[in-house]
Image (tube, rainbow, N blue to C red; front, side, top):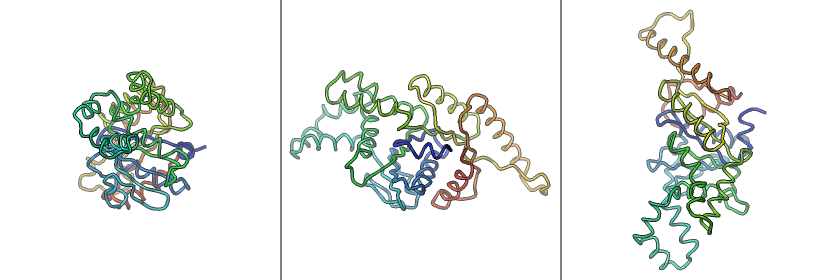
Length: 291
């Protein structure tokens, strides 16, 4: 079974990596590939700046579910809005719900409760996957915060369950923590660049996921690789700089491979702006390179 086959069997996939390494583009690429395999995929973005829609050529989400092609949708989520939605669901009287969500005590609780915001976001993904939810979704891909914050998100339900010590909130968090710990249902994909700092953070994140959460990434993707120049090609202006970057890429990938024995895919630097054309090109390359 290939890596993409295994990822396609998951219900929740969290994509993370150092900021600026193409994490959001990779999430869009995976969404497109898995939707093409017949899965009904929802891409969840937690960055308030909203860039996922640019990669897929859709309108901004603004919190709504936006179609992005056959079997694929996107949604931008903010934790405050998710938590307020839960309050409105539990307190159906609009006046009382507003009094709660507008109170100082409520906002202090949201800001102070350990792991509440992250748990709310992952809890939304979990609820979307439940039977009876419409539109039906087979797989949620979360474009998670960068590197350490992504690991914090995954650990949050367990921390909240401990802090809440039972009760409805604690039980919800504990159930979500159990779901995230099930490797047959949930997976993590890491994005990186073959450069010193991104590779170092990737190695640290792999170790952190293993030690703190008992998780092993499904896949590591090295984005933006400088393609090797053809040996017989005529020298061109700046070719020596290109070759130097390629040597750096190869050295850093070797450092990664020395510590990571799992699936690793290289995706080249392409002369395309962020958008559907880039996503489609990278999706084809990832499909061909699928370990």
